[in-house]
Length: 223
Length: 296
Figure 1 (tube, rainbow over the protein chains, first blue to last red):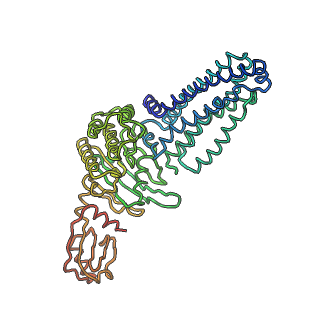
Figure 2: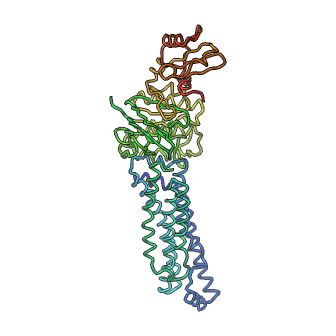
């Protein structure tokens, strides 16, 4: 049964998985180009002062920051808008599988694809930065990116939760709260602005539980 | 007698609005059961409760022995659902949807599916979202048959279907159900089709059940009488014992009743109403439905 759910989610996500992987490759290529450009035209010393003094690296590459968010949003929308339009979720709820297992496996599979995309981009950027900068800078640059990547995860779970919620009023309320929550992940652009990454991790881990709540409300016939 | 569906004192409110009031019904194994009612009489609410997508305000509905709002996966495996509008995974192709569903049902019978799909003359890679409503209905019916369920719940199966596809749907359904001794619970707006296929019928009125009986009994015992008398409008009124419904058009009087002709004659004599041309007019199920529920 899990294999069948994987098959269904793959049908929904496959084009997005390929397009996002392509965008990740372009982002990596662009990052290499930008770093080389700065070193070449600013000079290594100026670039070093810029990176150290202003605590900035990869800041100008907007895609590095927002690609995980775009991926989370796209995957959530593609997976669950199709399920909820015309109450198609009823088809899934009638399958001979428990409601919890169905929801958690659908979300788990979507998240596994998202994680694969994020990990690919993260390690790609690691390599790109590590080739040009010393270990301390690499560590700080990557640490500053972690909230953005966690933000992509939060956006995926929150999008899924909002779409699965059957009531439009609740969706709007959840949407506003989610926008506020998500913005926390994307506020900082420089190193070391976030000292408590665990809070972000904890939030990401707790959000999937809300999906079960929305699914249960749909099942009960809440309008 | 074993009951596949059994609803006891089913009551449901939407906010303060009462939609179902103490509904009781039983569906015997191997029977085809049709539920009819005008819009807003609680048909969809009843179906939603049976399908497990709505928890009743009070009362309960047992489907294959389990409460409908908490059916176990094993019981859901034995129930084939056709959702209103022939709901399907539109983003899948003909082959993909069969592959997906077959993984969930151990008794999967692919021949039923491919036999129906073969009639459509479409390639396996045809997406469901690019099909007409009629073609989609065949895909959905094929998936339900292949599932080999004990009970089929079909919510407004005729919706959006042209006469050809409706006939095809009914033909396949009848053959499958009779041959395999399945139980069916269905609703439809096309009463002529329901008449061809159901064994038992219930007709729902405003917050109450107007009738629950085998179709043959309804046809035998529910009558329509006509006579002409301009005075009748002042003497006759609806009375649950004798006159189920009444219509007056100019001086023509139409009486719907469960009483035989001789008792109606006696009744009209008792109220001193001339009825020399009183005669019984045969009825289709649709006319009986209108007779029971009224035209408005």
